[in-house]
Image (cartoon, rainbow, N blue to C red; front, side):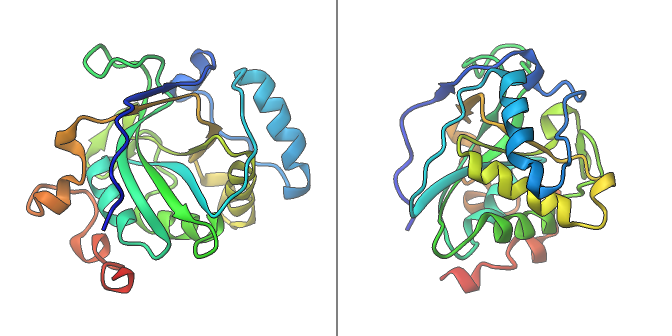
Length: 216
């Protein structure tokens, strides 16, 4: 059974317009040994107060196109404790205003003793086209860009290390950034495909539910 959802709608953490997802500010791939220096430089660029913490229950924010399908896929993964549909790295807490640069994302709480960030990235790459900028399936626009966001510096380091180790790293446009803003999506978007399984989704159904049985 999923944990109860937080009543808090928005986290406005800080950061400038460069975090808004204009399509011009993408992660810089560097060798794993230089990750800490790169992360420090990026922290200066974004002015985001990134925190480092450890624990069994951790959370990361994954953007992989339309959040309906991404949430349905992630919620069945072994080690995932809870998911929530939302918006990452926009510039406001207003769900009804003009588009503010956010990426549709899924706030993912996971048990780090059962599921590592490296393993989670592997699962994530099963459902995204990592070479496609601002498009997944038929959904087009900057809010459908792919990205990994967190308040935990270790998560960002591990995500960058995963990308660096891939032979296709020079083609990947998945951004990896500190979380600067988070807005919880409206109730109609929460667990949408669990409640309405016939609604459209850019992820094929056999892949969407690939891990459902193994998580029971």
